[in-house]
Length: 283
Image (cartoon, rainbow, N blue to C red; front, top):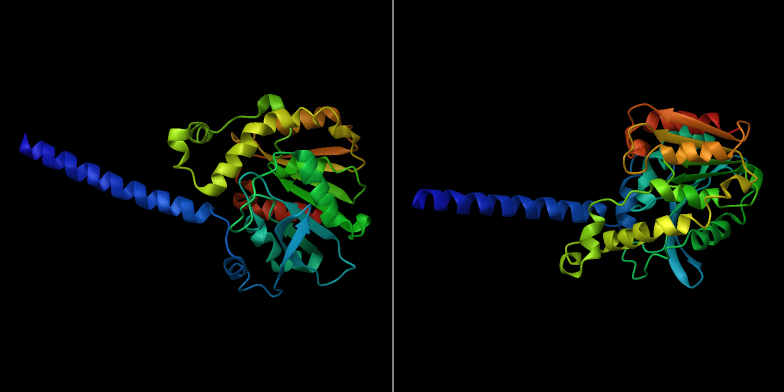
């Protein structure tokens, strides 16, 4: 009996230590990074980005920019929930893409490094912020790229741009799943377990379904041609989102590209395919 108690205590201790290590790693790797940490991703990049602090509606946010040739088209990346400028560093630091494009990526409000602001839980707010970011770019050279929650943000833009590219867009309220982890945020007695940035993501996720209903019946009013790239194995944002969008557009205005067996992490796991598609749509 004493031996069983000892084994139980040792097992419980080991489990506790492993949990704390994994929780610490999860907290660290999902927390928005400092400017210095962001720049580390570009240590081998031929062209270094510019990091600036910008203002919109009394909010400060971080923007990463690479502009080396104003005759090139501009890729403007909008991240999802959860997300940051770090999501796209592989694209911005790729030598071939740097020959083809200028780049802009930014942290949405609530996702900046040491951000004290709450997410705005509003596609309309995000649309106006994005419009402010692209206002001085030549429209005919601007390509908007929205990942996950960033998809409906770029799709809501009614300004004429060169093209709109969606990566696993969360654009249809009826198939908007709520991840299990969000339940930890719902209840005060478990909310303390959630890292600060995940609390912001949980708020945005919980309100996203209702917010989408204000937009999803007019997605096809965009003046821009739209390409949606979606993984067939995406269970976080199912491909039925892109199929719903496809039903709203003519075949001349909307193209759905399915990536077999890809999940919601396709911007990382299927980098080469997406890179190729971006280059193909530069013209």
